[in-house]
Image 1 (spheres, rainbow, N blue to C red):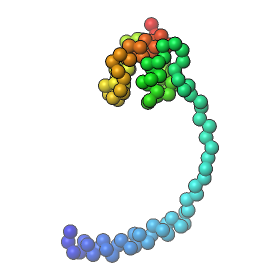
Image 2 (image 1 turned 135 degrees about the vertical axis):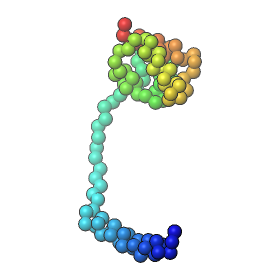
Image 3 (image 1 turned 180 degrees about the horizontal axis):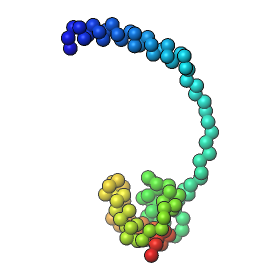
Image 4 (image 1 turned 30 degrees about the vertical axis):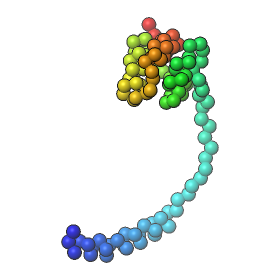
Length: 111
């Protein structure tokens, strides 16, 4: 950096810094608290044979989010579970894939 450029930065910096507080003072920020009511979601997947899906999928998804998905063919549920494992690195053990797909196909399956 040349000496001229350095001098321009040193001389301009106080002007820029001095302008910021003046601008903030002319339009102060007002922070307020708000109350928000969020819908209560399912805490666990319901029904029998839900152990594998409860033990694996609730780490990233609410049960309500999964259960509001459209009904899908078993093959598509299988692909979704595999996508979670391969693309998103969900730590689902091989032995849990079948029971998860079975659960989803039974509860949210389409023929």
